[in-house]
Length: 198
Length: 198
Image 1 (cartoon, rainbow over the protein chains, first blue to last red):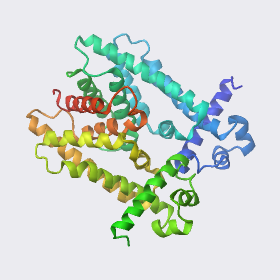
Image 2: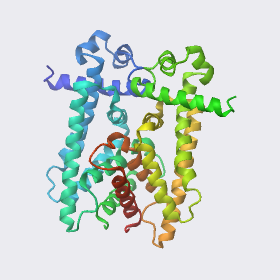
Image 3: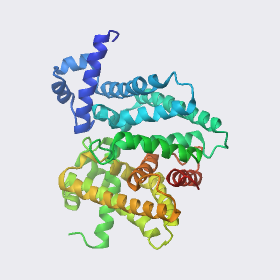
Image 4: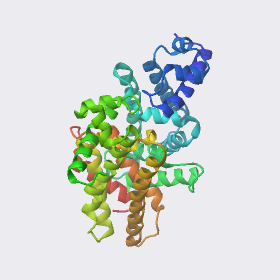
């Protein structure tokens, strides 16, 4: 359906604006009319691009996962050393959560109860792929350390996701802690928790 | 206004049911009529008890903070040793998040964008008190360890809150990891991250 770069760009622009409207009014509180107005389209024009409100929510979440792919996973894919690869993954993920540009999208990605059925399953499958990627990397880091694992890769992966994804609740770039300090501190904290040493 | 135990119990019951309705339909998607019906009151009766929809959301969140007080803080208040007190606090907080009974309430407590103005400030003040409590305890644990602190108490407190509050996203009591194993693993992981040793 949408194969050209131009229509992909248009869809992304709609997703960005719609995410802000959903963020402000809630998924149920925001009407397609509200979103059409914010995007600068007629309601019919909006439906033409996204099909339905459910589908729009799905496209926003899918876009969120695309951003994760593009700005985190693509950047680390050629790193061979597991520990460095994992370190860079954490740095990229933190950057994704704290940068203001995509905040509404990442929040909506976390609060995914509004999405139902097959579309929800698709998003959850993409999330699961990322979790498996983290688990695999954690297992490699543990193995590389030469020590007996102190906790299972799934529990470690979810501890990390909690620490990092929770940042949207409290971290403000203009606050007392700078992002570089936060990142360094969290990476060190996580590796100590995982391996019992630095 | 509400001073008797009986009206307090009634309010809590309303909060519990309303939390479930908000959880299912979203704050904006749920009408006071939906909630009245679920509680078994007339709409007028519901308004009599809670005043307004905003106020109801506030009461749910306030109830969530009351549960935290009652089931976590009250239980540890007489423990003198900082490390044991902190350990029991983590155990209590994890138990609060993972037990099914209060799940809707804790989710609503985290997704608090729907609450505005003075009521939001009140809830945020209660949350801040809890964060300060954790920070104080972390500082004591660090001091007791006799080592130079590896990270600041606020960053450690937020790492913990992330790990623990995120549990509602993935932990299921019927899953492969039992709650006691989860708790022990997370407590150990956190102390290693905080102190660099067990």
